[in-house]
Length: 455
Image (tube, rainbow, N blue to C red; front, side):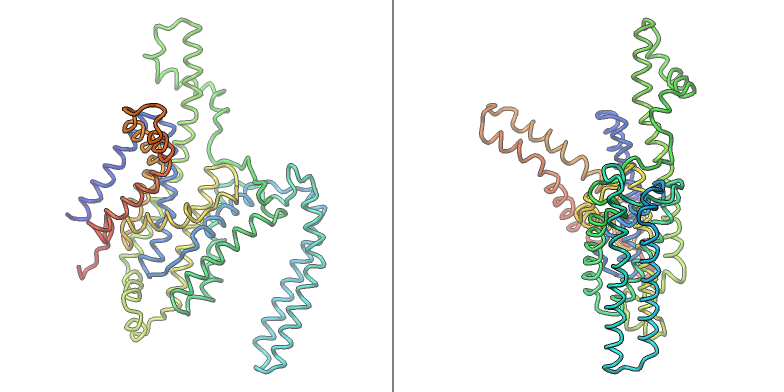
């Protein structure tokens, strides 16, 4: 079966299942799933750039997604003036001292010839600089976190529209990726996995503990939105009129009081649907843009070069290709895309919650999406993201329904019945395992395997 036919069948089945959710559960649930599928698709494309294009094993997806979330919070949240007054000056001095220490350390490393004296000078610069930085940084942090800690206790952000954070999240992730890549990409591939995993956990730890910057585990809620608010729509004459015209058949024949009550219920329900549709339009535009750029890049001479490096680094290096530089480039691009997706996810949630960044959701699942969809195939990664996220969400309610059906003939106080019903929540992991094994058995390259000229 050709990839084109597989793609049509795969997306067709997905959208049929999605509309069934809308009919039998609710349109709000359907759109919520679809929006998360779109964000997962963007994140899967980022991983596919790294693994599918260049074979780079990044197991720190969670950290790069979290950086996008930080960008959304720091971009949209208004600055806290009292916190800046309490500790802003000391924080500025600490930042200035940090830059001076880094500059001195770099200059000493470059200018002084290798010798025991060089090592001693480097230790002195870093040691003295550390204590100098803490002299100003610690009082600043204490003052900021003591400023109305129940409601703020942090510096806030820039106070600009949150949609700008999508680009800023990509820049944050790209910057950290550059730092990791400069350290680890010249070494064996397993060192990259260790480095990305370690940096990811460090980033999450910082976000949970540095209250002055991210408010830590107290979370930051009420972030700006790029779409209308439900309450504003419910009070909008234009929106009420549209709902009244759309559901005129359902409202006709009702008494005045009944019509008013029914109309109010429809306005409340479909205001949420309208907001989710607005999010869908924004996320779909980003996904299609990233997908188009990935397809064009992979079909270009640059794309053929990076795949040649992936398939045989020794031969590519012998042909004069700078393997490490291209790996760094790919690693930065893929991480930037993941950062954009992370900012989109926080925008959708409307809050920044560091404790929710778990490897199962932000690393394992994304890798499953890429592998099941077809690593090296951009459209396959998107299809894998759609299917895997849909299964991840719907596996638990389907599992509950299945267990209810299986145990319907057993006595209500049956021990077996209670055990099966209590275990229904674990059907999600079981079904995910079955899906992975099935795809790997009958299509080892994924649902849409990579196609090259040689094949």
